[in-house]
Amino acid sequence: MSISASQPMPPSADRAAVPAGDRGLPCSNEAESSGTVTDRLVEANRRYAAAFTDPGMDARPVLEVAVVACMDARLDPHAALGLELGDCHTIRNAGGVVTDDIIRSLTISQRALGTRSVVLIHHTGCGLLNLTEDFRHDLADEVGQRPTWAVEAFRDLDEDVRQSMQRVRTSPFLLHTDDVRGFVFDVTTGLLREIEPRP
Image (cartoon, rainbow, N blue to C red; front, side, top):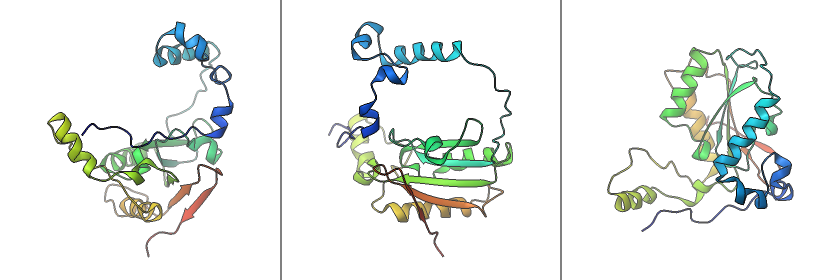
């Protein structure tokens, strides 16, 4: 079985309404002559750098918070939380689940760079709701090598947020586990819904 996304995610309404050129990227007719998507991004960076000035910030987040969120393209944690450059650490992966690598990043964030609070964000319509661990088995059959990682798929958003909170709160590597809060972001309304932790 070939591995591919089960269903393509629909673009968000606001993104569909904004042409690529208005986001600083060449429009489709320009894209044909400007190479790959990465070429377009590099060109956008040149324009960005031309007007860039060093903000003189320290690597330590101003608000002493780390945000763990899904990598979904419809979720912009900075915009959704009213954050500015330098306010937080943003750590993202598929599903926004707390894996060993998320704990690694949070440990460095807290112990080396001074963060004290953790905000966890899952979202509605997540691709991991449609996957199972069979994804790993199918992938192993296709490529001939078993992945060393778990898919971390889930069927219940709220319960997976609770599990992620629990993983953070019980990690022996983290210094600050008293301010850990979890949310589900609604991709159709932009609102966060807070999830109560396990008792």
